[in-house]
Each structure stands twice: as C-alpha cells, then as structure tokens.
Image 1 (tube, helix red, strand yellow):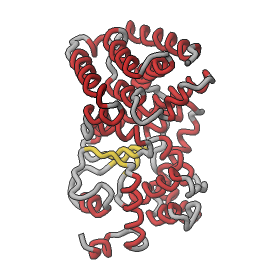
Image 2: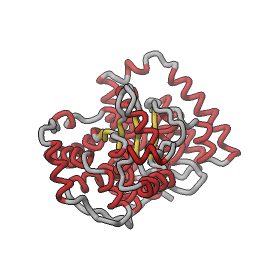
Image 3: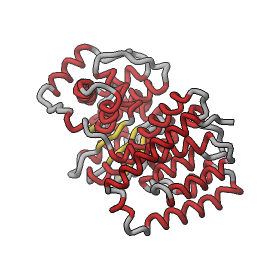
Image 4: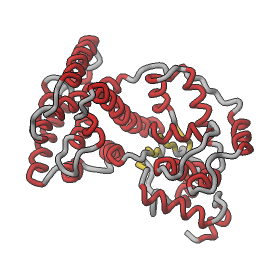
Length: 363
C-alpha cells in the first residue's frame, strides 16, 4: 500500500510515527489473532483500516491484566515509565488499537479485580478503560516514545465527555468464574509435581495420569504443564517461584498463573461469541504460545519441540495425544463435571493439593 493511502487515513502525526509504532509492535509481537486473515502483517494498520471500511462485525481486543492495569492508569490521568518495556509496549498497543478503531474488551480483567479488590474499584477501572479507548492515538505514541509521560488534561476531558452516558454497571463482574477453579486445581497439581524429587518427564507423565484417572483433562492447563515442566530452555519465573522456600509465595504464584490461564481460555470462548475478528494482547511470551495453541495457530508438536529435548519430545507427545483421545471419548465427562458431586470432589482435591504445596519441602 502506498503512502497516499496514509495521507488520507493515517490518524498519527505523520507517517514516521505510524511506522515506528508498527515496527515496535512487530519486534515485540504482543498480538494473537483469531478469525482475521491479514494479507501482509497483523502489525500493519492499513489492513485494519481497510477491514473497517467494509461491512462486517467489528474487531475486538482482549487485553491481559498487566496491559489493562496500565491502560487504567493512563485513563485515570496517571503517568507511565517508558523505561519499563511493558509500559512502553502498552502505549504502543493502545496507539495501534485506537487508530484501528478496535474495541478494548476488559471484562476478564475486571473479573480478576472483583476476586482481589473491593467491588467499587470495578466501576472506576471500567470507566478508566472506556476513557482510555477514546484517547487519540498520537497521545499514546507520544507517551510510548518519551515525548510525554501522561495524557493531557484536555484529551482526558474530551474522552470523559464521550463516555459520560455509557453504562458502567459492574454487577455482572461479581460472579466468580467456574473455569478459574478448574484451572486452579490443575495448576496446583503442576506446582506440587514441580516440587517433588522427580525428573521432569516423570512429573509430566504423572500429570497426564492424574488428569485422566483422578481429576479431569483440562486441555489448556495440561498444555501449560507441558511448558512449565519442560526441561528445555530453563526454569520460568513461575517455576522458580513455585520452588521458593516461602509457602505464601508458592500459593500466590499459582493463583496468578491461574488468572493467566483463565485469560487464555476466556479469549478462546469470546472469539466464538463475537462472531468476528478478535485479538488477544499480552507481553507474556508463554501466554501467547498457549493462546496460539488453543486457537489452532500452534501445534502440540511445536510445543513439545520448543520445551522438551528431542529424545523425550516424541514419546511425551504420543502420550499426550493418547490421554487427550481417551478424555475426548468419555461420554459422561461433561455431564459429570456439572454435578454437585464433582464440585465437592474438586474442592476437596484443591484443599489437599494446596496443603501439599504449602507443606512439601523441595530438594
């Protein structure tokens, strides 16, 4: 596409500013996309603008909590530190999303707020996100590249006027997410396995067995187990925290990882509900890999190859496929997992695994 197109449609200060944003996003690669075929790159604004000029459903973006918290800060008038790469990346992301007329969908981040804070924070955070979504793309570009530290009062006033009559009802965020509990159980099991004196392959095979025989096969959680227990590429921050001598830190990191997993599964669900293009945005490389796996942009073969050494990757992939096939063919699986008996069993298992995670001393 020629620069003539941008001379009419480019919402940034100039073509150089736009190209800087696109290049920075491409280098950091925070987007996972679904139901949206791009001719060239998911970081070229022209493709999104062309899409928006044609009839069809709008594009949505689900942002993870680390990104949303920074969006809230800017929408509330706060300053960011562009020396922090996640701060800078968030600003570049918002510059691009606002320029492309992509709607930010903050619901899952607000579910997390209700689980960890007072509910009155939800309304103020939702308002801040709506305000942030109305700011001019250049505002974000200037913050991203150090020309400013925050949105101007003038820009914020304009945005507040636009959202003045929007519904900001937070009641729907009070309900806890049932799949968070299922993910939490599986991740607590992974953390317990990681603290035992077993080699990584033994731990992963035990996770497969437990998922099929004792609990349930939570596909996306087991996939995260493949990543976290993988012996290739070194320990992740999550696994290093799980091996901490502080039991409270171990418990907290599992809860945080559960939210990451819930973001991924929620996004996959929303891609189907929106009936149109939907992006997931995160600075977390492992979370992006899981989302691409869940949506079909990444294969389990690639996942095992990336996180397990060649001698074990093929065997473990074969074992994973066998377990997945058995779980998929269990006819009573879905019906049983909706019963009160299962919920009671799940809570009992969670209590026992949490106790183990707190008490186990890692060698």
